[in-house]
Length: 161
Picture 1 (spheres, rainbow, N blue to C red):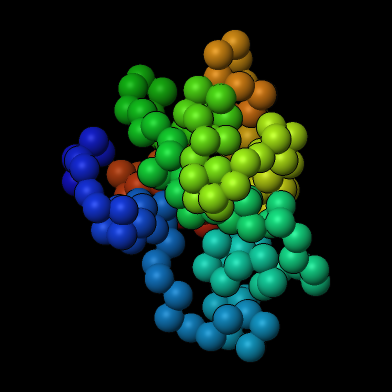
Picture 2: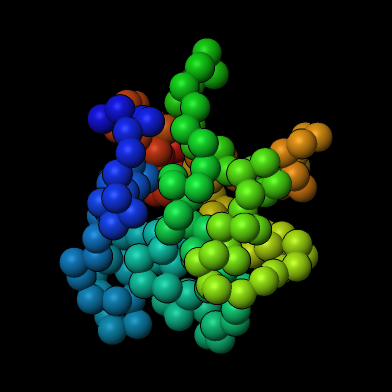
């Protein structure tokens, strides 16, 4: 697959799931006793089943964080260089606020965007998805997901295997 290939949004969404190591859910959701609950990381459950699968109360910040995760590969930049293959999403440089506003059909303050990134980083703890402080021009935060073994990036536990 060519990393710069253009696709329709629907096709891209499913391809992004494959690129990120997540397949469409074919099991019951975790609150229904789905078998996948014991095999998926917190972040994977969040992406597949929504915030209600990992928190008691769902707030708008959870919905914004999930939207970022679902569109990570589309909104971020795919990079392949001497440091390896990865997907980076910069809060300012990649116009994350604009993307979220378009997705939700409403305006957000930067603090709401930052809280969503922080929430996603909290759920990603222990996964290959890293949240770093951005450099000048990138914005406050940069989310980065390193690709593993040519298989593509993975939100799975550990080193992406």
